[in-house]
Image (cartoon, rainbow, N blue to C red; front, side, top):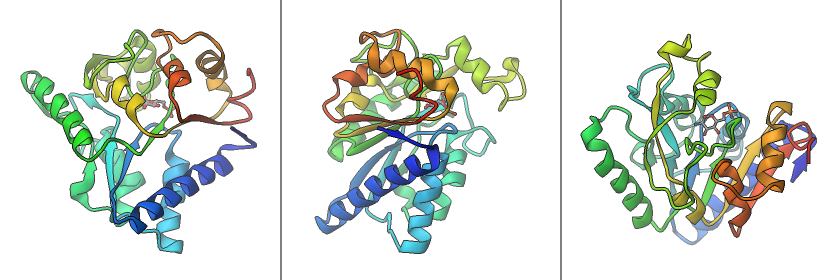
Length: 244
Ligand code: GLP
């Protein structure tokens, strides 16, 4: 779906989320959201905050699982995804803190494998993700599932691609200070989400969006796996859709 610009697209996504939350509220069920970081979802989160403050949308029945976190990473560090989520969304809405989950970047390497298994088990225990929000990396990564990630890949510690680290290096004041690894939800759990929305804005995403949607499904471009998802939508602005 192509919108004139990112603001109206973000509002449309927020409306879909808001409707889902309300349906689940009426059914007295939790709404399980898979959430993403990066610049792309900022407008969406701003709109969700507005819907809470101005239209009384409650997030008390929302349980969120974020896609990824740098490793190692302290939660109060300026670049942590915990902090990003608090600043962009969680601190401004009535979601319960115990319902917000972001992968833990403080564990020892020995602890990570069990932790990742538990992260998936907790998602399964609540019935899976109702709606997964995704951005896309310049190389086609989703979460931090870099090129080469398999369709059945699990939640795990991954090495970040050079291109991903270069893109992040501005935030970390230099490539040498940019993390080399991250924890990411695996492709399998993303594909198991009942609904997936991938958002992309701007000219710089146009080539990878074309590859993801129109080229063959390939592990080189993990976003291309979404071609095989039964309920996935790419929501784009005109610039990101310009090569389709
Ligand atoms: C990071 C995140 C991804 C995100 C990507 C794109 O790599 N881990 O989940 O999709 O950035 O970021 P942006 O939205 O800023 O282009």
